[in-house]
Image 1 (cartoon, helix red, strand yellow):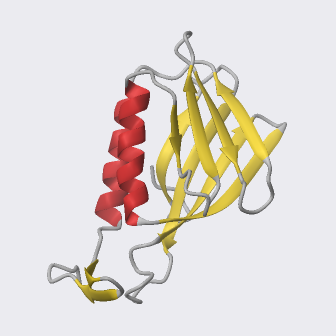
Image 2: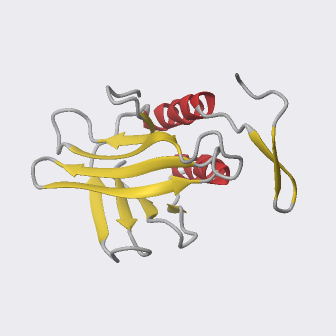
Amino acid sequence: MHSADGAIDLIHLADRPGTSGHRVSVRVLGRYRPGILTGHDLLDCEIVIVAEESLNASFVVTLFPEDLENWEETLARLEARRFATWLDSGRTPSMRFEPQESGGLVVSVHDGPSTGITVTLPLFVLPPTWAAEQRDLLTQVREAYPCEVAETSPGTYEWRRDRRS
């Protein structure tokens, strides 16, 4: 999901229209340090939580390529209706996902490294296609921001040969 400001959603979970108006998204804003080997494949992002008119919160996060791999694994756990965490390394805000028997999902974001704040938001009625939609978003992010840097040995980086111009 592309927005007018050029951001791409990596995650977009929302109650069905006409219900609570709750939504959680992770928006990719761009590369962390484009053109610089050690920062090119990192992504500047924000976690956004909205609960109608009562809450609008955002948390800044920088994603590593392995965070996208971890999101794919987290999504597989959620599809199996199992509890999952994501970004729990301690360097960024973390996310917890608790599937509910009703088919909903409770999402918590804990900003341990910065403010210590935890925001928990219930998503009561997810659309039946929510998991496929999240996989599509992940694919779009990977296509827009492919890994273009290779670590050839510890601490040594070079551009991949198939780098886009």
